[in-house]
Amino acid sequence: MPLLMSHPRSSSEQTPLHYAYSLLARGDYSAARLHEKLRLKGFTSQVITETVDTLRERGHLNDARLARGLAERFQKQGFGRCGVWAKLQQRGLPDDVIATALSEWEEPTEIKLAEQLIQRRFPPVALEEPKTRARAYRFLLRRGYSASVAASVLGREAYDD
Image 1: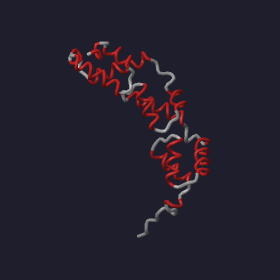
Image 2: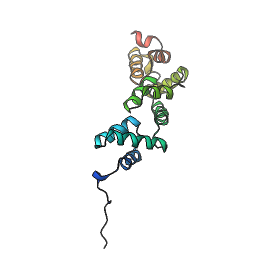
Image 3: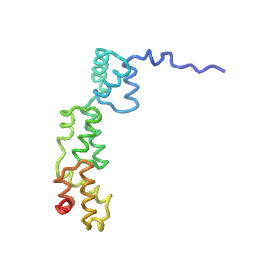
Image 4: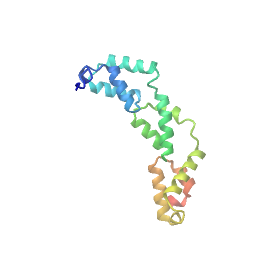
């Protein structure tokens, strides 16, 4: 019975490009987050910069595309503009890229999304009670919706109590 051969390179001999591709195969990375992963692996700044540039040139690393895709995903998960912004920052995306990705968001659309989220989360009868309305209001704020959007969805009395 033939022996199974392991990969000829040990992980310590892995090239930065090979390591970066192995990371990208498992998930999305921003350039900053990938840079940090390569730095932690022990590669030099020059090698990291060359690797990131190569991946950008080949179209395998694109912060703008990543930001748009993640923004859409987080929006579908029920997060408001501020919540999406915070989640994109956590992924290492620069503010200008985030701003571009969110530039097409409009308040009427955000109000509609917040309404749908509240409808899924709270029974209409329960929202007639001031405490439940206040809880729903705080829920929207935690999800990254602005106070004006939350007030539009729940009415001013939701936060006056």
